[in-house]
Amino acid sequence: MARDIRDLFKEEGGIQHETMSENHQDRFLEKLDKALPISKKRPFNWLQVAASVVVLLGLSFGAYNYFKITPTSTDINVAETKPVNIKTLGDVSPGLKKVEDYYLASINLELSKMAYTPETKDVFDGYLEQLEGLDKEYQRLSVELTELGPNELTVNALIDNLKLRLNLLYRLRSQLQNLPDDVEDTSKSI
Image (cartoon, rainbow, N blue to C red; front, side, top):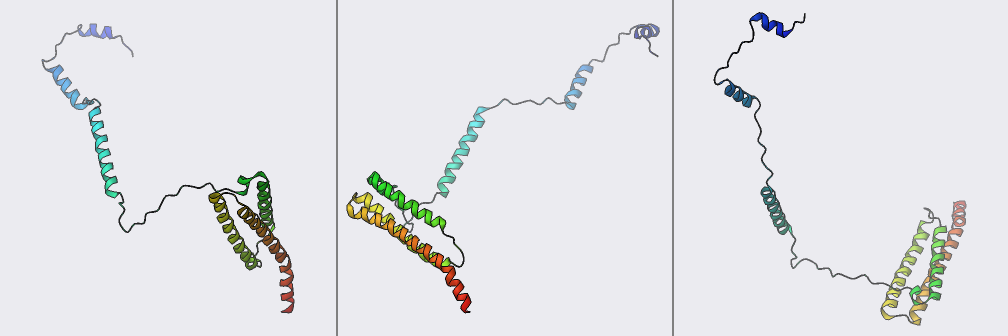
């Protein structure tokens, strides 16, 4: 049952003014400090951060110099080359660009039409080797065109190279078309 606190004090004889012992507050604060110590936050020191960065940079530079590979007499020095802009027939004249584009498009079209199968592998590989040789020759002629400038012999050689590659692909296509007949003929004779 709830009773008024004022009534309780009146019954007991009033408010008593008791004094605490002399060192009571000091002992209380001392116990409080032990139970909940105040952690002192140190102020942020930029000097320590700067010193850490300097040490880290010094160690990095030392490691770089220690592990750096120095060339010795047995090392091979590779000469740096600048990329050369190789001229093509299209760079010589617009008419030659049309000729070059026609032949290159025809070559790519013929290559895309051909089917590579295990039965045609040998024939196909032989022709691809010849095409690769012609492509290397075309690149050599393009370099010659770049270095010496356009002349009639180089331009004609480049066009003849493109014609030869296209004719080679026509021949390959006709051989591939005749190849199944040859395979059927050999299977009948066995």
